[in-house]
Image 1 (cartoon, rainbow, N blue to C red):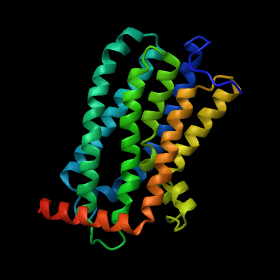
Image 2: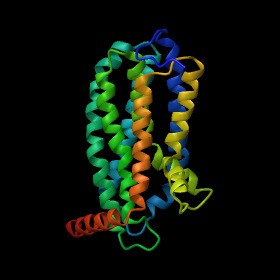
Image 3: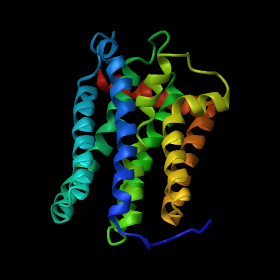
Image 4: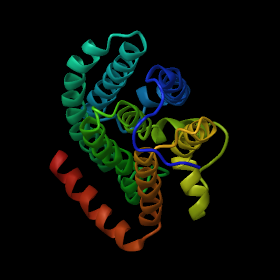
Length: 249
C-alpha cells in the first residue's frame, strides 16, 4: 500500500466519495436526534436555553459545511473558497457553544437519577476538540485539495458520536466494559473512518494526512473512554459541574 501526500488523480474523482460519507453522517444525525426529539422537548428538569442555542447553531453549521461540499461537487469552486472562510468562522462559534451547552446540561442534571455521570464530559468533549484541531489543519491544507477534502470531511463527521449513540440506545443499554463503552459512544466515527480508509485503499489513494487525522480521532476517543473509567476524573468533573450548577443558579 502506497501512502500519498498529494493527489496523483483528478480532483473530481474524489468528490462523489465525500458525498457518500456525508450522507452516512446525516443518516446518523437524522435517525439519532430524530428519535430523541420527543424526549428532548419534554425533558425534566427542563433543558437549559443554551442547549437549544447549541442544537440550532450546530445544525446550521452542518448544513453550511454540507453546502460547501456540494459547491465543489457542482463545480462552484471559487464560491466554495470565498464562503469557506464564513464556514470556518461559524465553526469557531460552535466550538465555544458546544462545551458551554454540555456543561450547563449536565450541571442541571447532576443529581437527576439515571442521568449521565459527570465523567461523561470526556466523551462529550473529545469530538469537539478533534473538530477544532482538524478544521484548523484542514484550512491550512487548502492548497492540497485531496488532503484538504479528507481532513475537513473528518472534521465534520468526528462529531457524529452523539447522533450514533442515540441510534445505539434504540437497540441496547450502554455497556459497562471499556471496549463496549468505546464502541457504543465512538462507533459511528470508527465506522465512517474504516469505510473511508477501505475506499481509498481500494483506489490506491490512502493519504498520510487522512491517516494522521483518523489517528487523532481514534486516540481522542480511546483517551476519553479511559477517563470515563477513571476515579480521579470523576472527582474533577463532579467538582466542575457542581460549581457550574451553583453559577447557573
